Length: 176
Image (cartoon, rainbow, N blue to C red; front, side):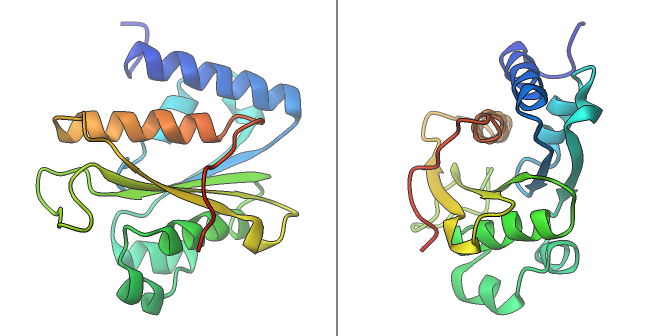
C-alpha cells in the first residue's frame, strides 16, 4: 500500500503541498467532522513540514472553545455546524499558529446527528488568510447528498478542504 488514504486524496494532498511550497505559504487546519483526515493526507506527503504548521482536531464544542477560542455563545446561537462557527475556527487556527492560511471544517458525518435544517452530509468550510481583515474570511456550506456513509462524507469533506488550501482557492459565499 503506497498511501494511507484513497489515491484521489493522496494525489490532491501532494498537489497542495507542492503548490504551497512554490507559493511560500504555511498552512494550518481546524478539523471537526473530518477528525484529522486533512492533516493525515498532508502529512503523507514527503516535504510537508516545509508548509504544514499544525492541525487542530476540535471534535467537541469544548475543544473548539479551548483550542481555537470559539465562543460558547456562538455555538449556542448558531450551532457547531454553522458558517459562524467555521469562521471562528478558521480565525482561531490562524491566531494559534504560524500559518498564512487556515481552513476549518465542521459538519454532520452521520449516520446520526442530522436534523431537518442540517441533515447528515452537511459540512461547513471556512478559509482565513493572515493579513486579511477577519471579515474577508469566507465560509460555505456544502451538502454531500451522494455520500452514503460516514466515511464517504468525511472523505468528500477532506477533498474540499484540501482544494481550499490551494493558493488560488476561492470560497463561494461570505461568512454572514
